[in-house]
Length: 147
Image (cartoon, rainbow, N blue to C red; front, side, top):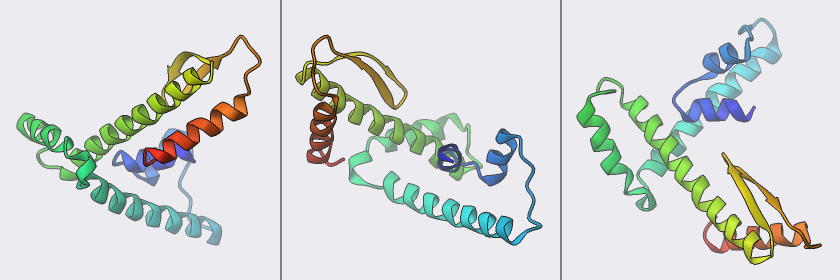
């Protein structure tokens, strides 16, 4: 289900998700119609959130990227596709910022971050450090930073 939100955030929709999952869209049952309406509402809400985020002061840097995309003419007929691309970049930037905070917190607590993988990381500690404590500390620092 997380993939569905990612697809919508990137400018796709329910049909894209069904196609990727190898499923056939079927609206013959009441439950299927309810699910379809839920997904349509989710698409509307995610697009509204995207609109707000892309105009937020914190992400002013995205305007340069918007101009660069417009200069290439790649999606000149599809402002929605441009916004979807920019939103992907904002999400990646946010994930990297949060992972940087978490990485630093784990290091402070004696853990070694062996690798970062997408929106997670693999950590290792030679001593008997408490993983719960390190995670709570990282969560606190993320909250203090506005996350």
